[in-house]
Image: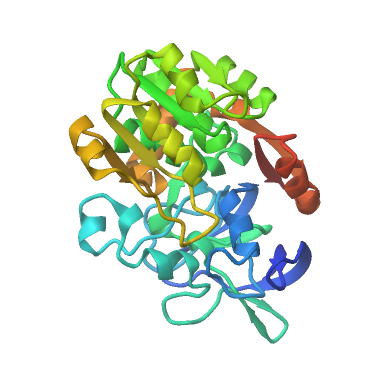
Length: 367
């Protein structure tokens, strides 16, 4: 069938709306009509060449919508079901068997390879193959092909067009706090970066009963939003050294840290902000793949510090997304307050607006 997609022709290009051909779903695949799709930093990292993906290609990996067809063997969802799509995984390796699909041994090829496992693409422009299967969905389009394994049913209680970010950015931030760091009630948390991932971490911390939640964010509007979502403190890291500001609030230092920046000078200040047995979890993707952190090993040992790299909040979407939806239904996880909706056709304007900080989380919606 024919559909409209926002195509990246070459590295660094704007998105161009094009009519392309999308195939019927194959075995284990799900074709859905996209209601909304989140605009994520990872999509733009592909555009800038920081992550591998073939050009021309269609990215987008926070899609939600309605199933219009299913391939052979699909039983999880049926035509007409409301779904959100998440990242893809093999379902067979040791990590998938341990309910840790974010660390699937085939994660890179299944999410960044640009094709199905047999080398074919679900998308074509004329006679040209177009990169597809980005995070198992390529949902910057009116229709997208996902996989039974990486779709999750969405109840009527959640606005369908807003559900997509649950599949990546929201579950990454919330999962980092609730699963990876497993922050204790009554403890303390520092979040560096007040974007959608960091603020999802704030929401997770509030739901967990973390006592002191500090957000470090240079943009005043995002600091205000963080406070309105339940952060107890919001500081400007450009005003004074972050460690000084944190230790004014917590003289012994902070117990847990969620870093969304992956910026070496920020991480250096984080380490100086951490208390004894402090635990740092990093979800940010370094802009320089060769970026490295020098740490004093004796200090790490003597203070009992720990560092964890985190992918997708250690989430198993089949169980964690319903958990977040349950919190949303209880009024304890208002992730929709971070979202600004923009018509899909204005994707390039939305990219610019998000870069200027005019929106925390953009969701592109189809009329």
